[in-house]
Length: 215
Image 1: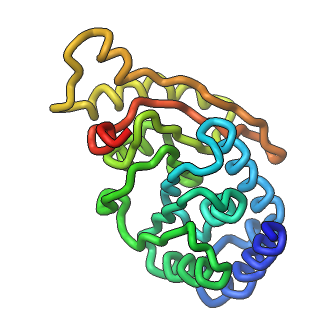
Image 2: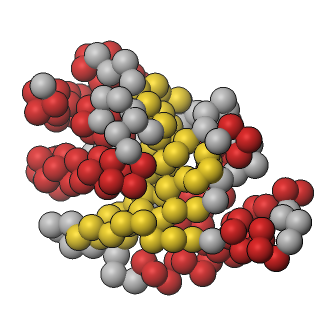
């Protein structure tokens, strides 16, 4: 069933690409590889957060990896956040055509998303972990995993991410040094090499103030 749904998903991208200008020509040529790599997101997510997490897919684009994750982990709840109108409309079509009851499309800026507490945030196209944390902090359950494809120098992002987490604490500042260290702690939960180069990296961080009380 997942393989059939993923084949239909790829078919929808090819069908609507010309009308909606969904992906580059190179991405269209490599679509099967991109879908396979998106399945690696699901593997890593299941490894670090289980089979039924709530996931925010930031800047979903055409649904790589968010739609693939929703198909592969049917017990999960995937929030596809895409503010570009054509792409969010395409995502809504995909969700309907594939019958993905575990996926919801948000056609707005992620800072306007509310009522979601995510164990996982995926980000395929956002430049840095610190930026991902900044944009989605209000949606982080405790703990939360940031999962993204990275190049060989990704460890250089860890320091800026810790600084960003400290800055984002704001009025929720911890009461002790030990609490401060826990609030800004970043743990590498998983790293998986990808076929086209680079790695899929999952980082474990402390939850955001908006979701911390909910678990």
